Image (tube, rainbow, N blue to C red; front, side, top):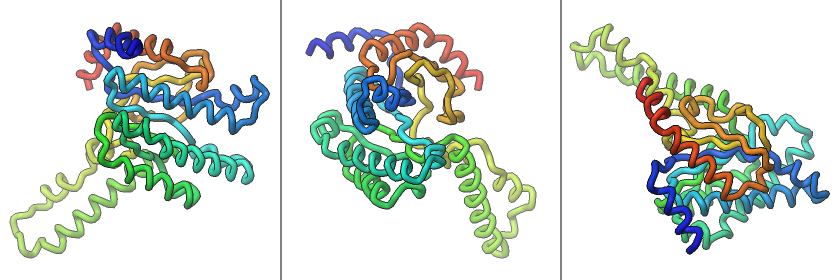
Length: 269
């Protein structure tokens, strides 16, 4: 109740619609405390649940977390397998958090090149998405096997394929419609910005208003490069398992303070 009252105060100002997190520092957290990496990642999972709860109380509709980069697949085979096992454990753990998912009406989306995941992990991800498909209060997007460059390559390829299919269909029907001109065909089949954006992995959400990267790092690490043009960046020095309400509050306060400027910048695009 006290938490709800505290967070209600922020609703007098604009509330971010979408907050994204780069979960930086789980392994360093484990190393500093002389605990296993798995324990460090589990601590990070509980931090995600806390951020989900706070964002729900604030009225944030979308939360995105950067859980696993495609770059992680360049590591040693045994380490990659460890990451897959850990991912499976976390996905299954997320499904077991039925009180959290159901109480807050969380819809889960897994975003990225899911073909790169081991089959058990991919099946668990699909199960989580199906199990929460009817939840509408808050969306949790989990980026796995993801990088922005891969996302853009995928979007361009999908857009090209879509246009090619349209051309094939028009050519098949052209004899039945003599009014179709070459000029009209060219205009209809040019790939536009809206086509690329529709085929991005993140096309199902609005762009993030705030991107939080823990551990004090200020680089984006190939995450949401397309979507963060007018996004407020915040880099607290804490490692991700240490992130707390005060860090989220600080990010939201900065967003509210800069909101007029951010909105003005958006209108210029």
